[in-house]
Length: 304
Image 1 (cartoon, rainbow, N blue to C red):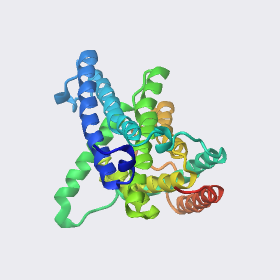
Image 2 (image 1 turned 180 degrees about the vertical axis):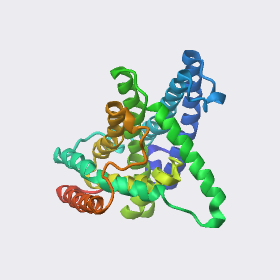
Image 3 (image 1 turned 90 degrees about the horizontal axis):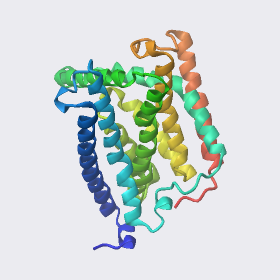
Image 4 (image 1 turned 120 degrees about the vertical axis):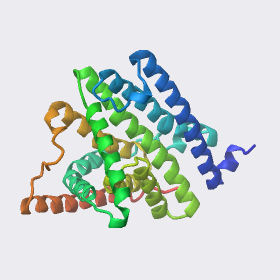
């Protein structure tokens, strides 16, 4: 049996270990979540397309919560304990680093919003070659089904349901996905390739691909790259966790405050024409400046 020190020096073994932990954990927690949903809401997995039934929706939320915990939170924590005596330090959650980082990530997520919305629009309007029309139709059908499920999830019945959906959509994904993709996989790939840029990009590609939504691939890839570099520079996972939470949480809060926007996804809040182009360009330039400031603030932190 490999010791913790031996595992530390074997990136391939680390990769196999985290994949195995994810597979076992997500299956186990998905089963537990499904059983809990069946007991509490009489949830039947064969009826998941019946989004008009509130019990089905609540059951799906509970299964989603358990599955996310099983895939994104339990495996990285178990991995940290298995590979290091200082598991919190191993996962880069033992230090909050410089407070200015949290202000910068907040500003970045705000000023980046118009540019990200443009990337989302461009990605959604991509057309595959004619010979891939069947694949494209399958992708769009899958995207439509995911969008309908998302709309069903973003239904509220008071402040309690808002907090519950924030937990499912923002808190658990922000903590869990950053733990897995930045706290574990990015480090493995950097150590494996001896190239920080390659490690950041590969983990960002996997981060976006795991969501299985082609017409949302590029905006997620962009966020994955941004979070990857910010984590690499700041050495604290709490910085990208905050950015991730803001990105997901804002959608939930806006849907709660303005429910009509959930069903009106076609129009851009930044308008159309020359004025929107100026907003997108301005968003990109200001975001690049803030991104540079994050690097500058953390440029003296030693990368290990």
